[in-house]
Length: 162
Image 1 (cartoon, one colour):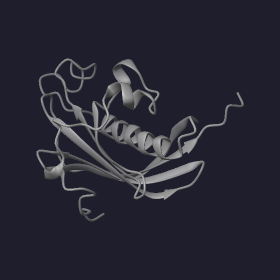
Image 2: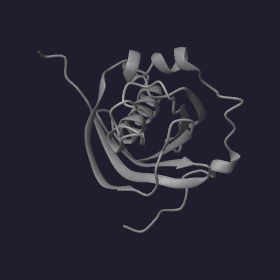
Image 3: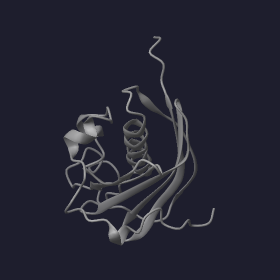
């Protein structure tokens, strides 16, 4: 898979002025505690289905001790989870109906660089398709304006019929 053009120019996104903080993210994303991956929303465009957010990669996070001892690397699966939470934010904020938007799948994922404690991960998503019960997004992540991850994430509304 060829490297895509940036969804947004990462140099144009400032971590100093997020448009939504953790409490505002929680209104749309249900993950809590050690699984809250987003620290702030930097951009939201409902019409184009685009969102950007950031995550500060901390040295005290739960995965640091074991992945990999002596050389901690932010796990790729957590990069996907971080991007999926941004997809959830964009989908749920756009739909504004309070339903549970769940991870449905991931395709064409490539990890293109390492992410280390102390890094600031910038995540971007753009809707490829959004219906009332399904969303599919191109997703990207950057560290120091360099692409470290890209892939396609699909999410869906879960029924409350358990």
